[in-house]
Amino acid sequence: MSHKSIAVDGPSGAGKSTLAKLLAQKLGYLYVDTGAIYRTVGLRAYRAGVDPKDTAGVTALLDGLHIEMKYAPDGLQHMYLDGEDVTDAIREHVISGYASGVSAIPAVRAFLLDRQRELAREHDVIMDGRDIGTVVLPQADVKIFLTASPEDRARRRFEELVQRGQQTDYDTVLHDVIQRDEQDINRAAAPLRQAEDALLVDTTGNALEESLALLLEIIKERL
Ligand code: C5P
Image (cartoon, rainbow, N blue to C red; front, side, top):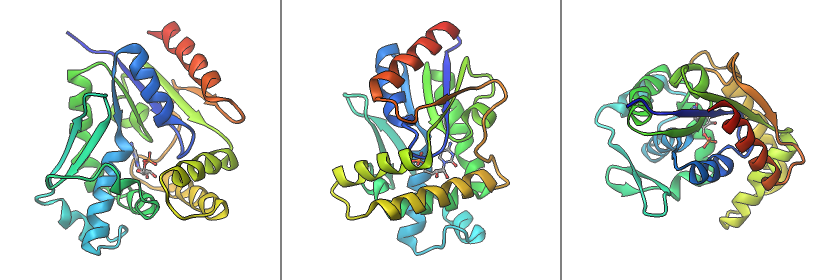
């Protein structure tokens, strides 16, 4: 039986993961946060003291790298690095930059591509990332490109980090969001861009419920 897939791409802080998680619950789909997988590779580089832009250094880490993804009973996606649950560790602010750095390396993307496709072969998925509609699942049944103003996205990220008890300030987060967008858009390997057949949804100023209702409507029309 072939499975349904929904691709949700867009820049950081657009609300992709929060919305995709809720949509997955409503639709009974598996939610796959692909950023978490890149973050796990980023964490590995961070812990090994390898510069995330050092292509040879990061590529060498892939040899023997053991990354697992498991779903808790509540549907939460847990990431394991060499058997250790790193679900919280990968959310540290410093790891965002590492994830963005390692994700520009073609060997890293190639290493993770099949795993992502395999999940879509085995389940109905809603997958969020940067290149799901363009590279990972070009045949996805529904493609959404979710965005919002940099200020809105930085505010959301800032609130998320504060909730997690991390010390930071809004201006730093805004600066990092803009820098990460630039890196993700300008890299040669699978850059962040809207697929031609993706629907652009701008959530600037929207309450979560508004965006959720809008996306549900869009998806139901297209599935
Ligand atoms: O989505 P999240 O902010 O957790 O992703 C962390 C980083 O991983 C992004 O800045 C991006 O560089 C990278 N990423 C990617 N392709 C994906 C998902 C994430 O390059 N499909």
